[in-house]
Image (cartoon, rainbow over all chains, first blue to last red; front, side, top):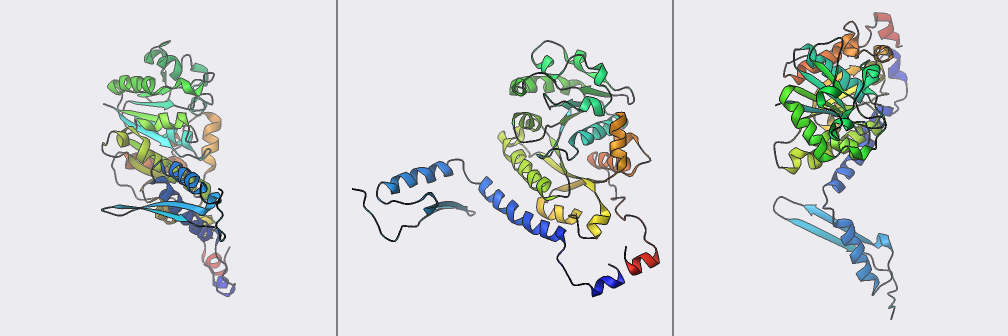
Length: 88
Length: 269
């Protein structure tokens, strides 16, 4: 850091931007890595079952597994469209 | 029983082969019977870096398929005693490295060598998985750059789930971080991830920091592992890394950049 640097406007260094981006992506990837292999398939099958009754898009079902020390919680989040249509 | 060390990274071009050549040469210089094995079937390069490309007769795949014995395929290094190179096949298919075949060759070599250094291909495909599967220790070669750090994290996840040690519930593979192409001045200017930054993200023990150096290209031009250039910073940094691998304590060197004069420090530059 030189004497004149104190007068320059502070701009975030590219290295610190790199670090922040890495911390986010690496945390996200570690999270998905620890999930069991069957999770995507489970999500797909759940989607099919729900579609028999309600027309929903792929991204309207979220399946997530959270592990605690003693137990795991399978969280299922289904967003239903405003107007529920019955295919029958 | 040999200690099996994989040199891996996920990303290509970060210095795996350079590192394999120098670490194996360093171990042999210390008197250990060492073999360095090229797992990059189809794209072998270790032979060029080790300057034995014209002495290759048989290769790793020939040995696996029983067309040659290990002794026939091993190329003895001309500079350092106790050092042997097992070249990869240049013509065969990657799938020729079968899990059983690799296991058999490594088991047989384990009887005569102290260290087996496995030079992994880039990526996370079959060849890379074969190279890391049997490892006792892993040297994860990383550049201070986003894609390399991300890929290193990915390969660490694979080491923790798909290696033999992980599958058999043994003590986990010992992981070492080797930071290469490090440029201290750019780190000081905030243009490059620092050692601490990479450590915060990967959090594995640091084996060494190899400064970005012209000596590396110079060495590969001539087919001499850079560790033999004992005048160069990169060569000395590799020698330090070998010492740490053997459990010795060595302070990090070559991280102060060029000494700046008083005026330069005052006015920047």
